[in-house]
Length: 385
Image (cartoon, rainbow, N blue to C red; front, side):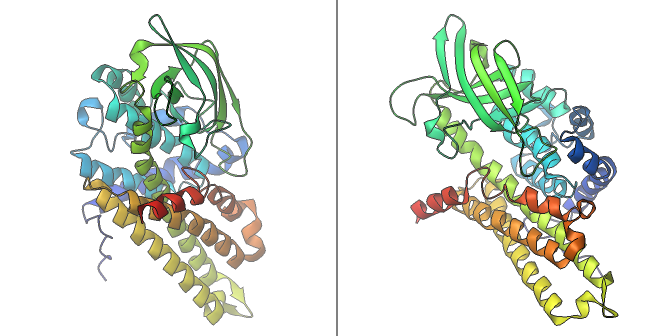
């Protein structure tokens, strides 16, 4: 039988790229996932390893060290990486690597000067530095316009005071693309992006979480931090638009990761039900088990269809706000429900750490919260109607 055709908007040429990604992840990431989860940290050297393999540069042009022939193809290759990274066995590892290259680096790529790209984007693509995106604060999560971290003008730059929290790579970062208030007036005005580097006045602390244990999610306290003029990203007081522009790709990444995770979990669960014996017969011989698997397959395919449709529109440069919002809303709760159902089908074995299923359930629960809660997605979608 011939291999099944790739799902649009992917094509046959993407199969080889995806196979290379899967082999890399199987060799370099998955075997260490349990140890990194137990340590609640993965080694900094992993950024260099992934960068050397070329996986950080998929959507960036060769002039900055990337491999993208154009925006559309680069987007598709980066989407494949998000799908495959879900198979690494630790959403914390996927989050740390993804936040670096797919959430923190894109604003530098889109809005930075050539000098800023040479300073931060090129080494980020190589994995020589680690990046984070600093938006969420103790009093401002989904309400981005409510952020209070402030930058006051001084000779040669700004003095920054405030606090960021729930920041992925928030302990280990070298450079944090940071949203803060630089102006007065309207809540949506007076917000700018500054790239803050580790140094005097920057204090970080790790947060204990339900899932994503290998990811160093942290709080970053900023006290009288001097940030030079050349670290301004984009136009002063125009940062809110930059934040909104970055959200679509971040939410697509989360949707793709959820789809990839559901694919892997269903493959594992179908294989388990074929080999697990109940009363002398495989579990899958029972109609109730087959019907439950069928229901999960429908959820996966609905999630995949919505996500790939949004991806195709985004890669084509079309306005995909509604489609990305719907994909994010559909996939995140679905991923949690599928993980929970797969654990149930494994019975007691599914609760054991060695199965990876209890971890998958914990990791998936962040999805309906991170990157914009389900409630915010519903509000965005409702307003467009």
